[in-house]
Image (cartoon, rainbow, N blue to C red; front, side, top):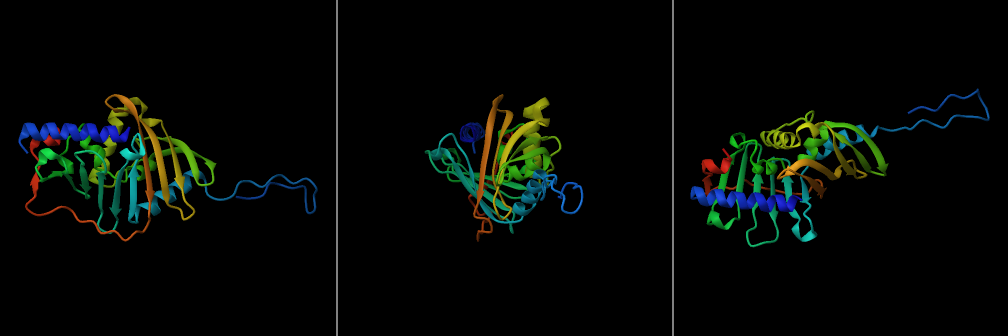
Length: 254
């Protein structure tokens, strides 16, 4: 779904730009008793493992892949934790939209109608109903997982559970915009969104998948993200210079 969503959003942006011109053991009978109850499960609960993974993953640089309908449609990117900058880019197609996100700003580039320019938007000013806000939080799985209401282990490092997106916590302007968008789209279903997640042996979140209600033009859509290369030496910078121009009001979706 995500690749179609990005393409649709890119098309919408292009049209707007054109129009605008820009544990313990069980009880026993006593020492040496023959019948002893099985030991109770030990270790952290699945919800605790996921919470710890969110905390640990949030603090490091990493690479990410947003899954498309096919491998060729995947969108690749990275996040520079020390600088708080993330970037994703389409890898196929004539127009290859690039999105760069900071705590407060979003930059769009790569569309032919931009004529080589990069559009700058203040995240707080983007309309909450604009599909552009789907790009304002590149670490959205970490945001959504703060709303876990229940989770079970389905295998080593694998989990499934339910999210209440209305209880998820935003920490940046971008994550707030993202949550506002998906919660509004899901409406009454926002409190019970099913998800799966994977955590590696080091405790990092490596995968997240959820079906977000009504996110794709009123239809449910799969949001599938993979994280890797934790702690990678990444240095991202936000666009600057004469090629960066302020986005027209119409691009904000208002």
